Every structure is written in structure tokens, then in C-alpha cells.
Amino acid sequence: MVAEASLGSFQDSLAALERLSCDELERLYAGRLCDRTTPGEVRLPSRPETGPVARRLVLAVLGAWELHQHLEVCELLTSELVANAVRHAAGRTIGLQVVRKPGWLRVEVRDSSRALPCMILAEPLPVTERGRGLQVVDDLADRWGADLLPRGKGVWFELKVRERA
Image (tube, rainbow, N blue to C red):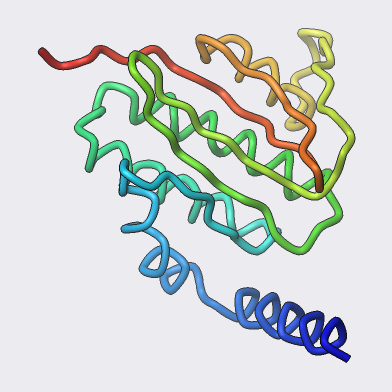
């Protein structure tokens, strides 16, 4: 009986998350991601319009942390990771985490699939819209990778950051 009630509240939470607009998601999560003392993951609905929300959340974090020199690259790489999670994982939500450690900035997108990403080297011509996301991540990130998690995987990229004196 307790398990059924727990499952019911979990399903209700998912449904409530999926009903939130993009603006509501940003207002709900922007402050939480900016808090460097307690890095945490925020859950976003796995839908195409989540990409712009995730990008704006990451940009807000970088602005708050005064990492303006990384805005464009992080925006693009976040977009690639979120698009892959939405397109290829079957879950209802994805996780987004931004972490600053000495000398590094890390953005991670988590999903429910345990299938690890694979970079496909596409032919240079003709140019296609899909299939180049991880190549972009590989080209622009200082490091990137994927980790299996107890329930899915996390795909991440890291950029070197200069510590202020």
C-alpha cells in the first residue's frame, strides 16, 4: 500500500513538472543551479522545448558565477547534450547539473537510458542536421564523457576556467 501511494505521488510530481511552462521552469530552477555551496540536479521534462530552457539556465549560472567568457560555448554544448537526451532517451525527464570545481566548469545532462553515446564520424558532404552533436562537443570541450548511473547515464563536458586571485 505504501509503495502504491509513493508511486502515485511520483506520477503526480511528473505530471505537474510536465505541465509547467518554460518560463515557470526557469523561475523554479535558476536560483537552485546558481548555488555553488550545494550543487544539485534539476529535473526538466524530456521534450524539445526543454533545450532553450536548459540553455538559459546554464547562461544564468555562468552569469552569476562571472564566467562570461564561456557563455557561447556552454550554450552550444548544453544544447547538444540536451537535444541528444531528449531525442534518444525514452524517459519523461532529464537532469541538468552545473558544477564549478577548482579550475573546471562541468555541465552534465542525465537521462534514463543506459545506452552510452557514440560519436559517429559523418561524411563532410552533404551536410546533415543530425549526427554531428558529439563531434561539436569533442571539438569545443576541454573534456567530455559519459558515466553509467544506477538509473541511466550522465553525459558531461568540462571547460577549463581561470580562478580569480
